[in-house]
Length: 170
Image (cartoon, rainbow, N blue to C red; front, side):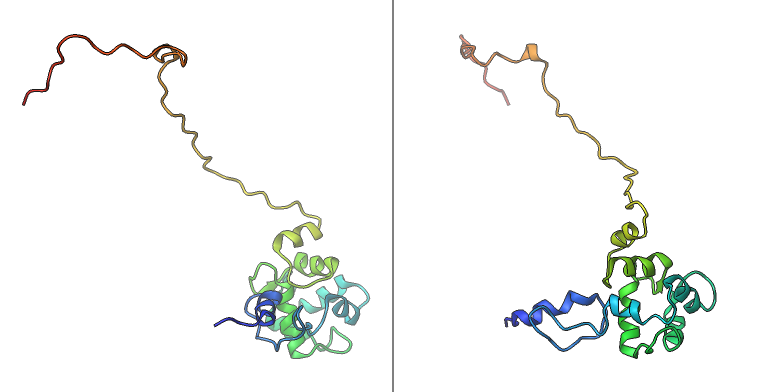
């Protein structure tokens, strides 16, 4: 059974694993918060200070519980539970259930949640990852007879053998 186009467009728009949202217009539902709104609601003027304030255990990354517990004091007005879940998943580009400084500042620099790790690296000023192929593909060269063994293309066909033809014996 065919699904309406509107339902097909909505599903992947906001990242895997998010709770389903009611369908909006043809472009999909409006997110609960945009990256610009998030940035504007930070309680500190500098994003670096906000990240440090949210990193309660000072390990250099934000886990979901750490993020949830600081959502009320790091934002004005505080983030709603829906906004906390949405923004956490929107920052976590590599899906490791934590937000690194590069993910946090990369999303804020780009201005949109749910970025790829490659886009985050570029926004953070890192070179794009290079995939090294440790085992290069072998080059296969077909066996071709030496040129002297080949008849020229414009040569007449070879004469048929003359005389009796031996038949195979059993």
